[in-house]
Length: 251
Image (cartoon, rainbow, N blue to C red; front, side, top):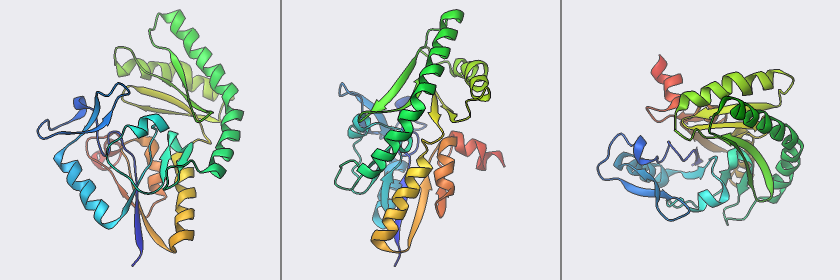
């Protein structure tokens, strides 16, 4: 029988913050902030789903979370892990996959000047307009990966304005090596070489060398997850998410 693997996004896919829980009964903690307080919860349906898939397949987290943020997820995984939008791959023993790390470090170092230029451009726009948010460069394990802006008032329309007035014109002006990921209160700008799909393809090839022919499933909530999900044999989309609104709910 072929072995089955589920590449699954985490936040807003297997768990979510309290504000995003459609059902508030029988919630259980799933992830924590660095101060130990609860960050995200699972619903009974999510726990039943996770138990169901864990019986017949291996779940591989495929997330934007960093090493530190992933260490505060309390679900229990036993195989590979994809972090930082595909920037870092953990092996089953929890160590960083060094060949992939070396490849990504070179690509991300080359992309860093562009990220820094865009960050300065966004912050200058914020100073000019009186906007209260600022950019932050996300680095992990000694490698810079992407920049992110969060609206201090959680007004998502403000991030849409930054994307429309600042980021997209900058990309169109000769900076095609970068792309935008906006979902909820997160506006992230990534080098196009940083993609979950690339890391999933790398891990899938590794799994095929280990197990022979396999069956792969992809699961995620965001537009940016669609690329790695499309490369899997089957795709799973949670309802009431950005990706479901763009696909199945739009039919």
